[in-house]
Length: 308
Image (cartoon, rainbow, N blue to C red):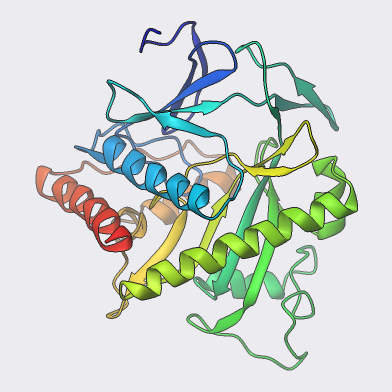
C-alpha cells in the first residue's frame, strides 16, 4: 500500500493535518506549529516538534494497548516521522443547534467521534479555574468537585480526580454540566458513565507513569469515540500539547513553556482583549532561534523523561 495519502486532506487543524490513508484508515500528521489561547497557530515552525508530538502519542497508544484500552491507533507511518495511521471514525457537525453525524471520506469506519473534549483535573493549575467557581453561569461548583462548601482553593491545591467536558464544535469552547454533556454526546447514561470511568482509568495510568519519573500531571484532555458495537474508545493522541506537567522543581515540562513565554510578552492579554472587544487578533511575537530551540528541547525532554 502507498505511504502517501490516497485522497485530499480531510481536515487541516491548527497543528494536525488529517488525510485518508486507504479504506477505513486516516493519516494524522503533526505539524511543527504550535497554538495558544485559542488563537490561530503560530506561523513559526519549531524544529522536530511534529516528530516529538508523534513520538509521545505513539508511546501513549502503546501504553493503552498494553492495558487493554480500546483506541483508534493502527501503526506509525512507514515513511513519515511525524505521522501515525488510525482507524477512521465518523465525525459530527453542528447545524444550528443540532449535532449531525457526517460520513467519513475514508469509506468504512469503526464508529463515531463524540463531539466533546474530555478533561481530567488532578489539581488547580490556574487562577482561571478558581475564578470559574465565582461565575454563576459556569457549571463548576465545589459540590461537583466533591469539596466542602467552605473550601478556599488556591493555585497548586490538589483536588479529587475530576472529569469534565467542553464543547468541541461551537465557535468558542465552553464548559458543560454533566447533563448537557450527556445530551450533546448522544450516548446513553450508562455509556456516558463508562466514558468518565475510562478517563479516570487513563488518568491513573498516566499519573503513575509520571510519578515514577519524578513528574506530576496537573490535568490533561482527550477525545473519545463511540464504537458501533457500543464500546467507548480513545480517539486522540496525547502529547505535551494536551496536558500540564511539572517536575520536582515546579518547572513546566509541556506546552506551558510556549504559553509562559507568550504571556511574558503580553500576547495573552492582547488575545483576551481582542476576544472581548472584537479588535483584530494580535500577531505572535517574533521567535528567535534561541527561543525556538529551547521550546523544542522542552518537548524532547517531555518525551524522554515521561517514558524513560
